[in-house]
Amino acid sequence: MIVSASYRTDIPAFYGDWFLGRVAEGGCRTVNPYNGRESELRLDLDHVDGIVFWTRNAAPFLAGLEALAAAGYPFVVQYTLTGYPRPLERSVAPVEASIETMRRISRRYGPRALVWRYDPVMLSSLTPADWHRETFSGLARDLADCTDEVVLSFVQVYAKTRANSDRAAERFGFTWWDPAPEEKRALLQDLGEIARDAGLTASLCAQPELLGPGLGEARCIDAARLTDLAGRPVTAEAKANRPGCRCARSRDVGAYDTCPHGCVYCYAVRRPEIAKRRYQAHDPTGAFLAAPGSSPGSPLAVKAEGKSGA
Image (cartoon, rainbow, N blue to C red; front, side, top):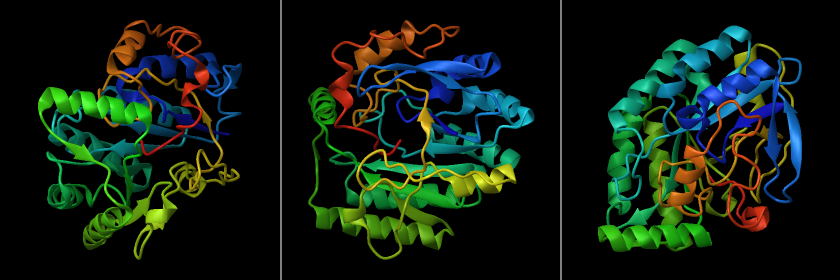
């Protein structure tokens, strides 16, 4: 089994002690967001073939990665870094600090253990297309020796995304928009060319309608990459999280509405204040990352919104 930790929240940034504690205990409990059903998830080496971490700030978890490596757990870190202005990403780590953390991970575990995510791409008056070309180019130069792949995608405009983005736009005085498909494809092609010039493979996460020359389909839960890192076969059937997804089957240990980074485009948080309350109520010794029923509304609320990017 491959463990995803987690595309529903940022475990390395905020819940690393909980995760290590559950590994030490041999398992955790999760809640299926589609039907509210609770289940047990084993986390011992007899049941875990590899772990995929999703994060915007792995610095608090570097010692945790070391402990997991020493125990024999192969892992990949899917690391999001966009460099967006604060009105779009209120509480993420500074760009320079993130680059240094990514370099430390790559030096210690090798470039195959790290995947850069420039994800999602959001067009706004603060981040127009040329801003993305310039910013992405600088980041690609800085990260070219740290990894072999960058994952791209355009923001998925769910109802919660629109509401959170509109509130931030009104508060901070910017505009944002969901561009036409041809505009998205043009920008993605440019970013893909910049990536290739820097020696990186560019892939696109779960948006096959935007694929073009030089852009492959991302496999964010990637059994082949884990196989390289583990030095033994890691096999898992393909199991899409949403249409167009090419991920291998995994079990996610996270919970929605628990990440307090405050990114306006986040698919996993209905309102930032809800995520902050749930983070503050988190029990690092509990079997669940978030107590069942602590998120307001029905667990079916996220059913149509699945995984998008990081």
